[in-house]
Length: 366
Image (cartoon, rainbow, N blue to C red):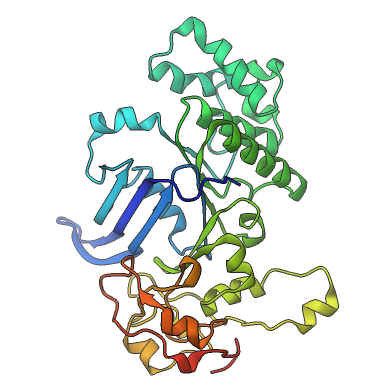
């Protein structure tokens, strides 16, 4: 984990939307609906910081990470990298930025070309960005050494490696151009637990050595806890909560975050039985037609009429903790009174902040 959590913003996302059109028609395609994959998200990632992005499958976290990398175009909003607006930047404008923004993908086998050797896979970005051919192999050897692989692996194909070794190759490729930002899209979800720990430790060491900035996308909150400075929780394309890492686990404010933490097993069976839980039933709503008000209200055990009618703003509580909920958990009356509507709130939200009467509410109260 980086110690630099208060630096200038490397990535600044402002009210970003990514909608995918659904079209019909035989001769002329016409748009009949849209999938609201990312819907009005504002988030910044500081220089040298690790931000964890978590949520259920289908919540939009991978779409958001790919939009940050400009692998897909945003429908609306703004995306800035080191102060420059790159939301609509063309290929020529993005080319020098590609050196500074790299990605490690979820599936370490699918992200590597099975017909190329390791030296070609890692060496290709070096050649594309002007490294002389005679220096490529030496640089690839250095990168393999950095990620814990031996020089004799240079001429092997991806199928000759284990899952953990393939992910190390993906990390080496991402490091090849000495980037400032690495987006990690569930980099350990396909790996065994023991191998997960090795990759997490490797990423931690590399961040300390090269002053890297990470956006760590995952659905496993127990993994994210160990690597992140801050954690953002997404649901149905929107941010539900943003918090310093440790505080999210000890003091979750949004019922959805509490439900996600309730799903993490505790090794002690007695403690596991004693703890409070929020059990979320049903499936997430259709992103083609998101619910009105708070998008979590159809599944929330604490939902009331205001949740169905008014979208809650992101309220800023003490210690920089943000949560979008009309009925917050784990907050005192004083904290609720001190809360303010944050500037990162969605444009469509209301102005209603929680009432001090919500202080000390039980997680399962309705």
